Image (cartoon, rainbow, N blue to C red; front, side, top):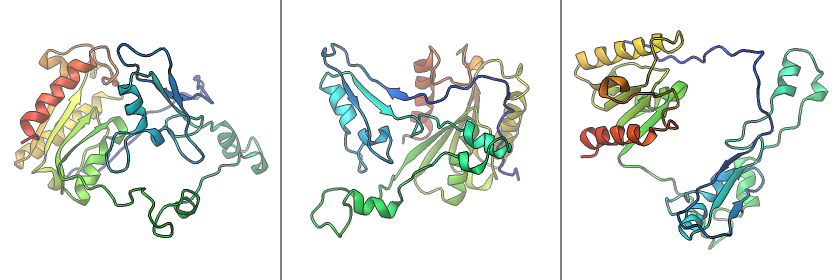
Length: 258
């Protein structure tokens, strides 16, 4: 048995951190119209407001792009994908500033949303979908430290999980839940040159060997060994990201999409 584990690499306290930045997602269609759209979310929300609807229908962001408009979806500073500024919180934790200097953090509860956004049976006839979406068959794709999430999910229940794809994960797990699920673990270049990633690759190799010995279906791929070179830890953003994606999709088509 291999225990679940996860750890973060050490951080350099003297490094540079950008604060109050804003994440902006901006697909631009071919033959774009000269007019662009900027979608700004409301209170207690994020850019996800404009994405896919709760029941899987096309969101406004995608719809506007299909209509020919360059569309900019923002996560306001400190929301969603825009990291929060934590220097004041860290200063308090280090006893450099008093509690009175802590910033105010506001979050609306689920219960408030039912009233503020007019959801639920109290407001008869409203069109917002409330029921949860159930995925009958899905491939869980994870990355880095949170590579552990699909494995933790499978430990709770393997129902609906067609396969797991883990990109340079920092997590392995108890073998039993995964023996009947196809698993792909993908690693890029220069792993052995890194004191952080080399032991994690070795741990994943041990996990794959142990799982396959018990009848599992785990493939561990080092991209340079299959002819794909130059990939960083952020291979989904490398200049050959489509080549890597196509390799993964071929694996999914062979092992999960049946």
